[in-house]
Image (cartoon, rainbow, N blue to C red; front, side):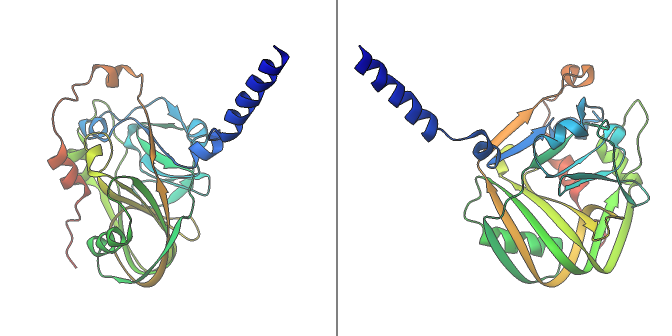
Length: 264
């Protein structure tokens, strides 16, 4: 009997050693709060706090309750870019209706000789990735010839749908600017839940301005790329989310919201 107990103890100990650690799983996980379709519908209030968000990573893209500006989550600091284009750190108690976040890691380095537009950047990054079926995070620190961003004004209830809000967006153009371009690339099958394809935000090196990226031009930069094979979705428990009709396809609305109306 003692031999059996020793054998069982050895087996259990071996399984513990072989099991993926919590930190290992976290390093492979994209965390998302709420869905992009609910944001498109006008559900701009969530119950996730910035403090809780930071427990899920140090890098991400999202917005704030009332749709009050664009979020840049970088190096474990959360910045809010309001309608004036200025970026400021936010308090841990600030609440969030939608965000995608992760612990950034560098699995590969991609040298990009140039990008003439955001579409050009997306195409070059896509060609360098090993798969279209998992998630990737991209970080580009450097000097950019041009970055065009936007932010939107905070909204009052009853909230209009996002496609109406972006008609009031403020657009900012940065030239010969140093900063960080951060992006998340999601598979096509997340449609309705996340943003299929690329979603980019930008913040200046001094962390004073930025926004949701609509366009870019640059030469000779290095992109750090991390791959993520786990997806964790947390849904809000707010009354508006629980009672919302999320059955309609909003793919066309999302494309209009993400599109840059300015042609260089």
